[in-house]
Image 1 (tube, one colour):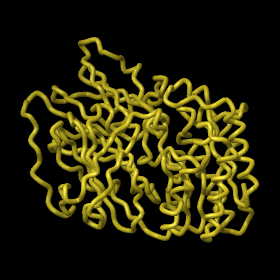
Image 2: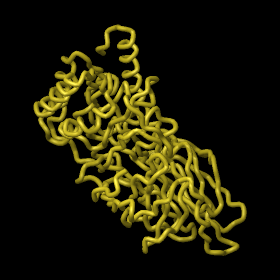
Image 3: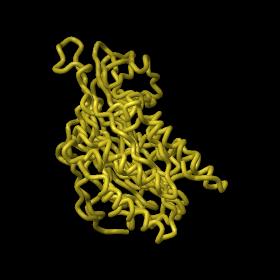
Image 4: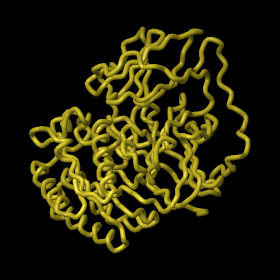
Length: 447
């Protein structure tokens, strides 16, 4: 096990969790005017950075995960005030959730919230809203309620994935009054990585993108705890469960290399740690997720040896190009990188299968204001990439299913105009499944 890890600047576009407004006062900003930043987009010009110090093992609180937990932290005593943590299931296409109680409103961008209450039996109403504040679902069902929680609740769904991404995204319900967080990853019962996030606004802190891939075989588990402004523990460590535990094995027969579309996440506020927006989840065949948000074709080529070869795949699905043509990279340059990726695959006995890059919806991109407007010729550059892919031996063309009559990404499939949401990811996943069915039965695998 490495005793020291390199200093890492881990960058994530973290999203707002909640802000409570006193029902008897005028709020500074109505809930209807609040929307999250788009953490799915990893452009340096379009994200707010969250840095994390990577602690060496010698610096970290390197307890074995089987050791008993420390004594719970005591909450400030007040018979009339307590903290309640609520959780609910993700609602597709919801960008935020309005939580009403005791004459107050709070807004959450994740599937839970911790709030302060005074009454003995507070009543809660949760409504799911889209980006335009239209109701997606009335009366969202609360699946759990916990008084005075002593540790954060993790929200990763690794147990529902055939294989978690090699670039992990840790996510949790923020702890009441936590200033920042410590995150630990364990491998085979020993501390493997330790991150200490810098201060970040309390309502913007519920996920963290790991920039170091998890490639070694083993049994893994991660946990998080809230910290105060003096780097002292404010909460206990989160509990180990199936959702924050996973296994890495090799070889993996089928792998997928790509950018944020492959990495996962959607509806602006839902990170790749949630399965509903991961296209691999809609394919009946297990596929190892090698996606990394923000990657261009050049970056995929650059990390091929490190991230792909350890898993010795038989088939590698390559979905790339959207960050090229929306970032003023010529289609010719993209094709050169993709050609090298193809040649690398073939030299290692890997079958490359290209998936045409998703289109954009410039009107939605301008509306959400999270992403730079694409260049005027993005369609021309995308067409150059798609035409080349369709001339390869193996290609899955998803263009028609995702495009409207103008050749843009269908508005009903993406909130931000860039990342397909659940229905869009389902289209991609089922197209891959159809290709694999043909491939495994010896049929025509180009589609």
